[in-house]
Structures are given as structure tokens and as C-alpha cells.
Image (tube, rainbow, N blue to C red):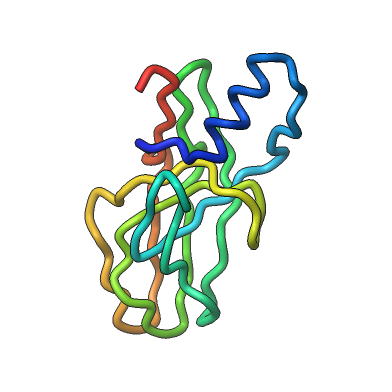
Length: 125
């Protein structure tokens, strides 16, 4: 995952300066038709069975999602181009956003699967 959002940068800056921000207690992956570091994901599907997926990360430095994530759709959702991380299952604050390796055209019902260890958060990037 490539871009820390503006919200996440500010959160980390406060943490480094001992200003005790409320760090996320859970992280959720979202899909969208676009995304920026300023706003996070754009064009996140609404309805049609879609829901953000809770992500568990492992690692000591570089973090990787421990399990595959499955987004289920009961109808078309357009071409999904980005994945993002949020601090809530709905709404919440954007933490990271990155383009998918390959866009996915959801032209009907189906499942989008992100493989285990495919979401990589590199603190050195």
C-alpha cells in the first residue's frame, strides 16, 4: 500500500510528539473506483452485498494482511481500482490508499478476493 492519507500522517505526527491520539483499535479494508492521500477511497460501492472487511496484520516492521479478504457483491459495482484502509467498518477515517495491482470490473454478482499477504504496509516506503 503506497499512500498514507493526510489523516494518518497527522495521527502519526501527534503520536511521535507524545500527544496521545486515539490510535485505531481495528482496521478495515475498502474498495473504490478511485482514491487519493487527501480523501482516501472514492467511489466506494454502496449496498449490493458489499461491506468493508476487517484486516488483521502480522509482521515486525513490514506489515502484511494475515488472511485473504473477500468482498461479496450481489450486483454490478463498476470498475474497482483502489484499496484503502479505514479505522471503522463504515464511515471513519482513511488511513492508507493504494491502486490495486489490477483493476477489477464488477459487471454483476461475484467476489473480489485480496490474497493473504497482498496488502503490504512498509514503514520505510
